[in-house]
Length: 209
Image (cartoon, rainbow, N blue to C red; front, side):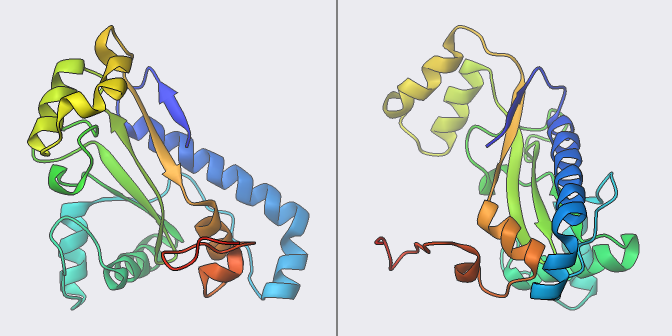
């Protein structure tokens, strides 16, 4: 989970992530591109930067125009993820698309709110060929606001005091993202089931081995 300090907004995090992904895929293609095509039948496409960026609000409008029903306001169903990725491929010729400005109702208390619209967060998801592969945001670094937003989410601040203490005496503006490496491998190789992209799959019904 990369974290970056002294940022101006979540777009600094987006810029960093897309550069990293484009570089990594370029190196993979150079080193293993022929073998991947031979074994998996997948032609590795090195993405150009910047990746397309579409707000959640605009995404919902695009999806609706394509006849896909929205199951949850402010978030995507798997069908909606595929639909917006199809749009990104058609309009931008890109396998990746960032979805930005999620409503605060569907995001954690520590995601920073937008100064111009407090109903939105400075957050994003990255979709790759119809699947969410990362979630990120600018984190709230101001102690008083963190406590306030935690209470709004129904969280007892005393129970997360160990976390809040990191911000009590000052913390720089920062952000980051969580990446699912197994999802990245799945999409990179064009594997249909994530179980085949993991050495020892663990799910809700399997803990061992």
